Image (cartoon, rainbow, N blue to C red; front, side, top):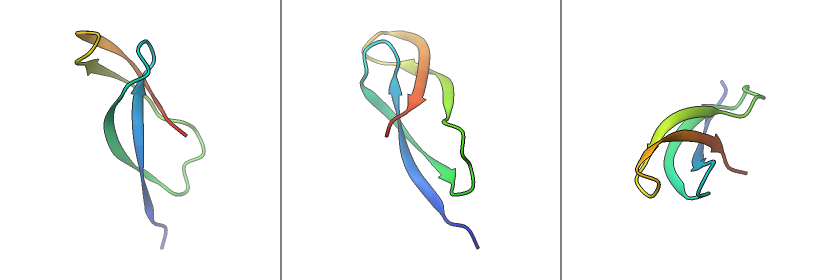
Amino acid sequence: MKKNNTISLACFECKRKNYSTNKSAGTVKRIEKMKYCKNCEKSTLHKEEV
């Protein structure tokens, strides 16, 4: 059985970590999602932080 890993998503523009989510252990690709950033006050691309 594979375990889920908790990761954080950071705004691509201001680099703040705004969201956390789960990622399955078998996933190799990094997660990228359009999310609302409170600091930028708009929807921006959020990428998985290392």
